[in-house]
Length: 249
Image 1 (cartoon, rainbow, N blue to C red):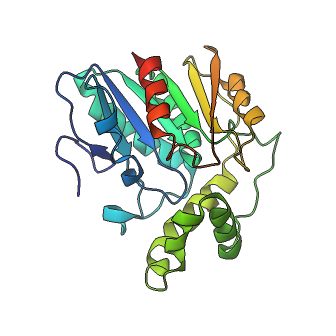
Image 2 (cartoon, rainbow, N blue to C red):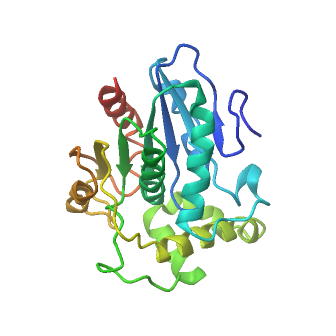
């Protein structure tokens, strides 16, 4: 269910009276807003934390998944503009696929005169244009699950449940299809500072890939690494949140 205080079906979180900044979090492929459910309790009271609930999962199970990144980012940006009518500045944080979504949303907010104060990305290099990397066929279910198990063995166990798999697989499949086709042209250079985070043993996002975000910002990029793999931010959550609070203070 929607947590009291948010105004659209896209956002989850609790309002923080007296907050001076809103942090909006974007989950990974197959992920949901619940991935960030405890972040508000671990951040200072001046920072309000919301998370994006993509269609096709949890309480939005029957909502159709977006066909393209453009569709998803455009709709989320509209929701954030509604939510930000109170004038509270916004920062964005995305993990893995969420980094690409957050980047696209940041551009749309910038176009609307409501640019985020910072874009924080995690576990993913910057998007690649069609001249750098051709759009790829979407992987089949076996390949998707192989990748997910390699990145998050514990979390992937849910896909082995015979009753749950048919229910939750469509969202994961749709996310991978969207990512396979995402080749923005031209790449937009944001007038927003970027903090790029990653695990020092991430098999799909080597540390050197994090610096690629300097190509899509005119305000500079800071790269920070933490001990761990692709989902380093779960065991390193206090460190990650301390960094974000420091940069957003």
